[in-house]
Image (cartoon, rainbow, N blue to C red; front, top):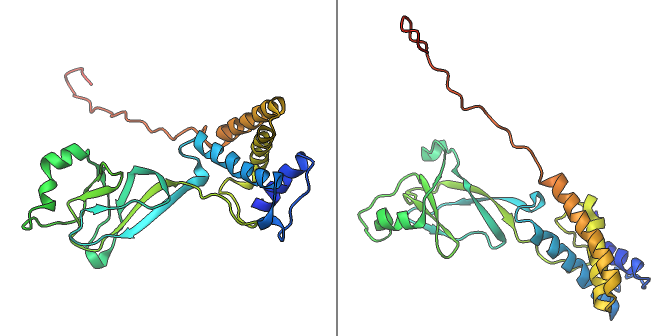
Length: 236
């Protein structure tokens, strides 16, 4: 698995600079620091090119609080997949488990927001989820028990800091990170021609990643409904 140290050293090798070690990594100086920064810049660029890289996918589970409508999204969430909200089956809570339908916030405000203001409103097993204007989410009806809620989301990767840190990008694409970091290193040096050549290679590598990781054919099912024959009428 490629670490921050091995990625930075791969860039330093291409730039004909002195490599870092696990001892000197934290105290890198001069152009070595720029090469370290270039690795994170390349990773950031890759993550910005696609909203939903599969290697940034994560699943979230949390216990709901009875009587509470609104909840905050995970701190590392970049994009929440609202189509995946579901309540887990739990016989101890008499919860059969169900998928939640997405409710527009305005519709929630128009029809159901009384549940947040009227103390006489009784909650239940949530059936709908809505995205609030502050990018957090709410449930209707609000839970009356400590149900288990689950949903999928894509994360915001954290920057590499320590020598042993590893990126979320799969190891098979480490060379793409190095290509991008090398391009940025040339840019830092002001070598525009080398920057352009290496960035073109970097961009080609990202397109290859997209082809492998994102260009998938979804399963399709038939929605054809066979009609019963009406005997004696000559019609189907």
